[in-house]
Image (cartoon, rainbow, N blue to C red):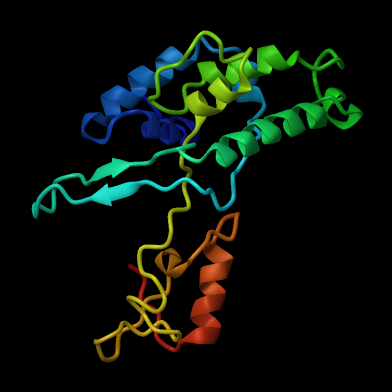
Length: 208
């Protein structure tokens, strides 16, 4: 009997939606065993660009509910976002060189930054083709490893879809309380934020 761990399920994000299947994810995970064991024994430090200046677009291709929309992310369209990403990587490097982190490694000396960057690139966290100069150019590393993670929000804007009390505009007796009403992500798992919004802002909670 085969089991798929949460780590393996998380890798579904690297497979195009229409190609996802149990067999695909098993094959993908099997290939991952060639990665350095540190990738799975340890963890990743993620850098988050809060409030990026770059903007993209989302357009419906037709009226078929089974059709995927046409999405253009435009990551790093604004040069300031790329500068912020590079600054974040350099900050992480400084943190990893502190005694607090080097003491956690097996040899007590830590890994060279080039090795850590190569591990991240090998983990293949997105479908963007990788470049050979990722470990010499932090700008290229940022471009090749960028991804949007987990806590999507903002599709049900306050003042446009719901009012200040989260009542759906133009509909009686319906409120929306979930991540879609957030203008910006709280920066961590949003469950507590959404629960408190439901408790203190409304008497009726509708999760959509």
